[in-house]
Length: 253
Ligand SMILES: [Zn+2]
Ligand SMILES: [Zn+2]
Image (tube, rainbow, N blue to C red):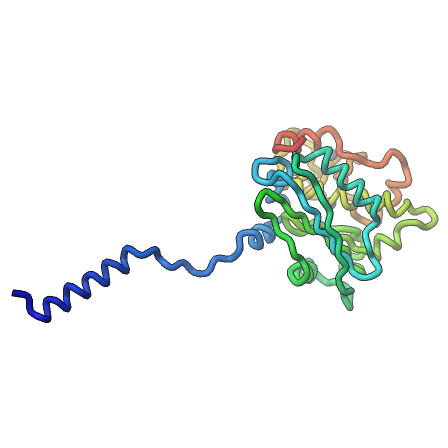
């Protein structure tokens, strides 16, 4: 005959068994998209180039007051992307204005903090998102016009871009902005040898992740103040055959 003590033990065993069968409670998960967006440059190369995970692409462009992007340059960027990536469901651009920063941005961490505060879209459900930030100031490396700083993020230093275009012996804004945007997207697509492996020797060893071909869009001076002198000569630089071959081998067109 069962005593109350045995009954108690059986109940305890049942409770323990029920708990063991229940799904374990996992710590709160960090949204995958946010985490993905914080990967280093080049990590999203294949996702951007192929349509295996993402069939469309959204460019979320945010600019600080007074530094709106040049619409023709953004159009040229879209054409460049259509030429090199597989996004059969389309490429769209979403543009918003954000408040200006007070000072010079001293680090890419500060740039990333602005992104964190204002960015609204992340890659999900078949749509890859690239974030482009136009700042009002100059960077601590004042010669820089643009910088790809994370797997899906790049910054354009608006003030520098304005000062280096549309004046004597400087190229048209559209030309300069087009080349800086395309160059930074080239980095996000894994060029050169940063996420998209080399198919031939064309990496500029002295200037990491750039192409050794002086006429190539991925030449190291393209996103610096030296760039305007290159852009006064036509035709404007495009991706060289070696860079295009690398992109195709990693899922691009
Ligand atoms: Zn570069
Ligand atoms: Zn090249």
